[in-house]
Length: 471
Image (cartoon, rainbow, N blue to C red; front, side, top):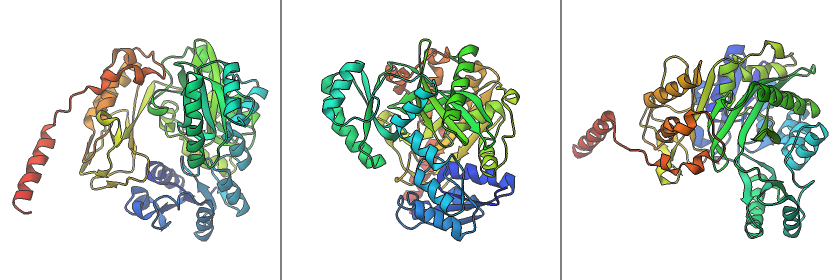
């Protein structure tokens, strides 16, 4: 087994990995920028080392991270998600220095990170893909020609993109002409590559992803699917496992496709295969070569610790489960509680958490790195915690979600909590039938009341009295 892991990340995913290490008897090493000096992952890890004053450069420097892993006696590195988690150079450097990279090989990361190469691999494996260009676009002229061949609307995508960035829907030639330079610019800044391609836009699809695990002995399994259709501007808000929208036949088919996709590229470790569903048609969208933000709900319905399995696989051990051993029970929902103001176009609301109460009770889990007194830095993603609920039926899961969201208290910043409560009360959502247009089609969900709770009013009065008294 691996004995010591450097966690090349921050926030709640770093805390999640620290906890997995503790349960496995593995020493954990945290890294941090000065903006994260008081982060919970720094406090909870066995060791912690500064990456310098700059809030981002340290987390994005593969050579520095691998050198630090060597210097601190680590025999493995876990990239988490985001930052360098899908950077093949980090995996290569780990291999060159005898550090086990807890993820797939650099070759697989590179192959699946290139969206056009991923499409070719899936087509060769018999996994259905959306109509699109065979490779990258040479220029705007070719983009216009290909769009006319495919038929509008089309999606203009960054070849190295991810996380909802570097992507634009174009309904006409005029929109394509406007979007092309913007996507090129965004892709270059975000991913260091100006390469883009076109796909047919599947209008108002369901967004379904399947979790897979694969070891070095040729064993590959799926852990069923997650429904990520509730999203805003391609950013996921609420995830559900399993999807309440699939038939047992669709569920089995998507799981089989995900396993086929992973085997086709020689995948090892944890990964996610994403699909778009429209009617009876299923199309491959992309593969994420890392642990997902929403891995938590798959853990809740299957009882399988995905991060633990990642570490076991990287240690050279076989999967602890076979496909016939894996079953799902009940429903789980994950709410990405972002420090944003929904009523102000979801504008980020960074600042000090003056008071935080975590929800509890049966079937409630929180993955977070915030605490009372913590200051959310403005340099990173606005997600401050993940609230996960699980129940045996869809209706019970909705009721538990509403109760847990109401239990939770995050004072000092605006959050998306009240917005999610409105979604859970929406009749269309409660039927379990929705697609990626749900948020766009329900602007009225932003018209919720912002009445102050008694404790908030008491705190405001106490603060005013203290200020008046000069305390």
